[in-house]
Length: 77
Image (cartoon, rainbow, N blue to C red; front, side, top):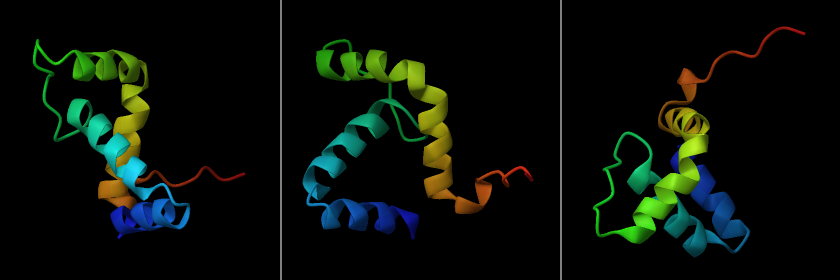
């Protein structure tokens, strides 16, 4: 359901086509369905080097999108 919600929000903002393209590029190099970039794919290699410092946060957010119940409960105030 969250997968549809994020796409719907992007559509409402008029950025759905760009959002989908960016999401595909990120998921191609980071996440459970990612593959190491081919040595001839300079764009994917650059994407990976740019995203690598953010890998933990990206993977955490991907897990939440895949399974919203995996989100840790907020700490009490």
